[in-house]
Length: 367
Image (tube, rainbow, N blue to C red; front, top):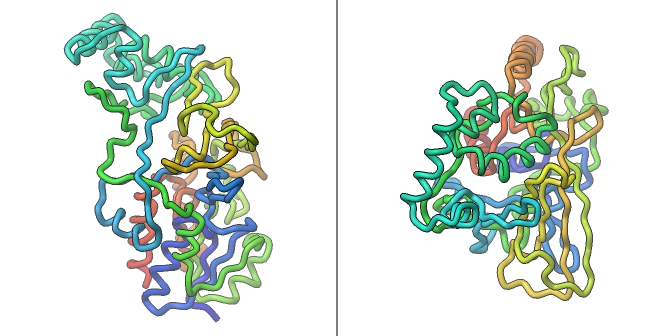
């Protein structure tokens, strides 16, 4: 018998497992994938730690979160500075003086502010009814049309005019020549990859991979006193109340032999709707100074989630949030000893630092 069965060996499950082990609890962690680390899994390909499920950069303003992860990995100095490609034109992200200079030729913050405010006034939008109107009311039509519209419609699979305004509550606009995307006090990537970091988190825990909890529930539940479930909350109940909606991602990885630098940057956002993929990722640039005789490029596509796909982003609109509330009520009534945690268990998007801090909080509450 174990004290706890944790379903999911991603960041949330692994942090909870580590915290419980530190409190003297016995823990079994199971995951249906053949590897640990969930979506932050990194695999060594041609001497490069490839982010198999998309780019992950740990960034935070929380010293507690930063100190926590540094117990398990040495982090490099990588600063996320993506660029946008719109019809062959390159723009700096986030929206900064580099962006405004390229778009309008302005050179001072005063000129940039005046240009944006002029376009906001011209729009006449006072009460945004959808994402398109919200974005224009925040940054003007030029930035919206070139750098937001196409990318967002690929990301969500529907026109911006049909997306709720709350998706873009605010947009980072910096009137400085600074291309630091996150603008966080701390950021970086583990020198040895995220997988090794998670491996250290799981030290002392029993781990079973290629083990589908939902298929083997009766057996696995009999092994532990309590269950912590980090999978989809609706899947736990067999989708009995209906499916929650997610966006999924598809990745095409290409090892480019004999090419040491293909695109010159870790991440390029393709904001033209006619380009089918959202981003291209060249993984070696996540590790400044890394020298290899080849490079690995990933094309990232977004799609509507279907049963059997890997869910990535919850679609937190009114319908889904209401349905999730019904599942939470069902959980309280039918299985009060099961803790639902993480992005899928709580049906809430978390950045890595928030997921980590939430996991520490859950472990403290239940132990």
